[in-house]
Image 1 (cartoon, rainbow, N blue to C red):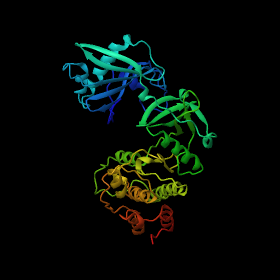
Image 2 (image 1 turned 90 degrees about the vertical axis):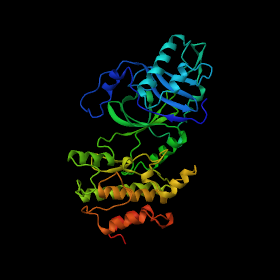
Image 3 (image 1 turned 180 degrees about the horizontal axis):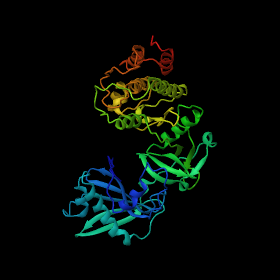
Image 4 (image 1 turned 60 degrees about the vertical axis):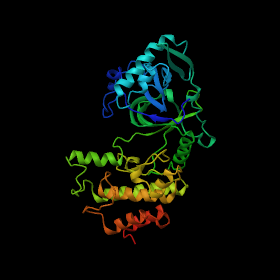
Length: 410
């Protein structure tokens, strides 16, 4: 329905926030939050085009349960015949004014609720238009937003399947990742995003590398109510979090400023940092051994397990972080081309090795080595080789691992 659209996401304040906030404490490990009342209307996000928008809304949904309540979309475009139309006011409200934009949509949908003849089991679409100063609406199933999820292929049929209706949502961890509970235990639930085939490829990679201690475990495939199609997957929830959080929290606990470039005092033993460097590299070697390439290796995609183990996640991301991306990939992306290669991964791996040695994740360009104990000349030489501008001049991940274990960088 929308041409040349972009997704405009923000966390909008909500009349039901007082209910929802009680369920957002990620750090509470001793108390289970009380059941929440269904939220009447929850505006989730907006899709914006030129002089038209679509709002995505949940109606009477339980914040802890997936696929509860009803899905609604509200579509409206600029009304040239009625300058004071409500749809024009919503369009002209900036996304920075989240309160006003949210409440304008909330009020319109709330007013239209009694006129909805029935809710479709998929998504109920409302097309809004002001005529003669009065709000009118047309109702239909929004077929454009129905996702045809892919079935579990035969090569993954041996993986445990969990219905999405059995999961209890606890908190949002990232854009497409939630912290959930299933059968009394906590997991990370990575939801199927825009690329259905991408989720399938990541599941295949995780299954092939299920014996690797350096790759996140695949606990189960999350399936739709039909018990056939894929909604995402479960993996262990790592309490310590990612490498960036580990370094940041350690500095904050010591009251150290992240931007203090002069502070070269390491907070973690070199032996631990070096073990992380080797474990991350082994994870990349495992990926490349099955001709799988990541494309977004960065500190936030390295979790630190309870035993201090570095574990790679997000093995087939939909985007990339410019600060950790190889220059040739950035160039091709500007031309509308996305190519994953082993040499591009090695470039990102080199930056990760630098981050691990320096205990930093901010302001990594240009590379500036501080007098951090442990970062020997041979280690820095490995990083330099990984960051060669010519992709053909970079070592393979296996060669990087060999140089790390050899310990002299020659």
